[in-house]
Length: 249
Image 1 (cartoon, rainbow, N blue to C red):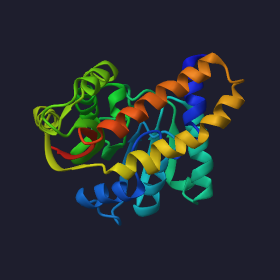
Image 2: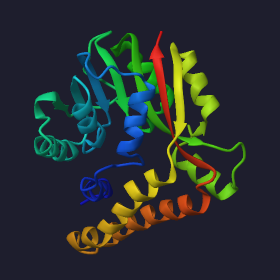
Image 3: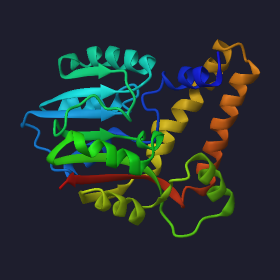
């Protein structure tokens, strides 16, 4: 199994493939002032194994298209949707987030937690805008500096991993420049990283290594994840994910 396959194998067993929580998803729903009774067309872009899609389905009168380019993740999502009794509300689509399968002005809401970085924040908000109805909502979480200056070790790491990392003011300006009215922004708290993402992933390391023969490649995947966790625990005062909520003008 190559490195990419190993990453899929590690993360497909997680409830979330990035920082977040049901509490913060519900908070974003509230701040976006989404009417729970109005019929809605929603796309969850970069849905992973479906934590957000299932929560949206449980709380909203919506048809949700859950999009991820990894069929392994969608298989898990479909099983979980059946478990929670929301299969009639969720349709999965294995496609790339830079080629969304929607007509112009088709969607009421585009939701994307911890995934837009795959194509870059600016490209995402620019490309996806055509799919939203006028007045439609974009709700996306994006890794964000929360201080003006940072330790060089941290800055160097994230500038390599994701050069588009920036402060909230920069992200909000991007939204405004691409025809959105920003409505709300908040920072994901520490438990979204540790309790909901990193600790469950750490608990899977041993099983993951055993399942992959404790190979050098599998150990390298674990070491890279441990490095990221270590950096977060050391420098969590300087960065987090920000949740951005904006309306198409």
